[in-house]
Image (cartoon, rainbow, N blue to C red):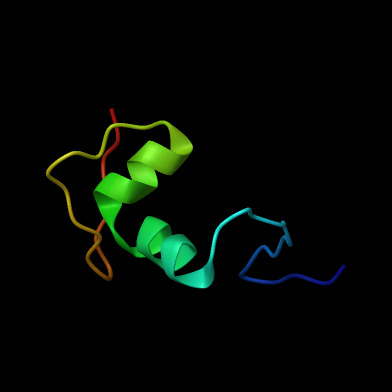
Amino acid sequence: MNSSDRIERKILLKADPAQVWQALSEAERFGRWFGVALAGQQFIPGQRARAR
């Protein structure tokens, strides 16, 4: 059995790379794209973000 510490998936998004990066790197935008409440939070390396 081969194991890995990551999951990869390719998808096609109808957005330019800058919009995608903002959605992945800014908590509030991420929440809007994925339908979770992350208002007032920040993504900080090594820390967990809590969605509502």
